[in-house]
Length: 142
Image 1 (cartoon, helix red, strand yellow):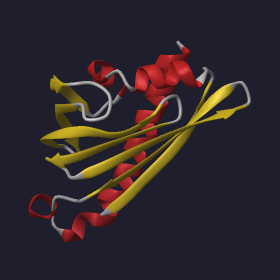
Image 2 (image 1 turned 45 degrees about the horizontal axis):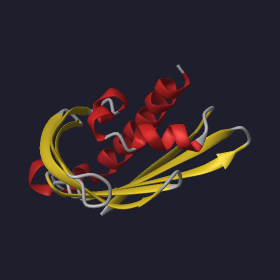
Image 3 (image 1 turned 180 degrees about the vertical axis):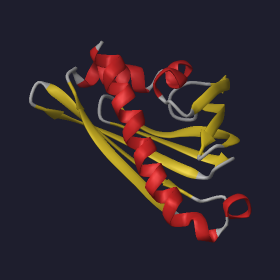
């Protein structure tokens, strides 16, 4: 697995940040590479949902499950179909705002991209993570 990470400080309380983060139906509003979310089943820990995501110009379909939630502090989502990954969101108070940290560990789909593409994919993944965080911030501060 490879890792991409980023963080951003949002001028909003953790409760407001967490509320948007946990609204699965709205993910595509602030995740620029997420094309769609579908088939949402359940809520809270154990919730599953389908997704379509465009990464480095290739569209992937998959399914994710929320495996951990700590209200206003943390969320962990695992994807086991499509691109295998784990998305860990950490929220901490910073001044009058909330620092949002995101670490994504994922398996590069080798049959699609090949091992030679790994350095490029990691670099692009880090850029995409920061873009996601910036879009999330802009939506919450609007």
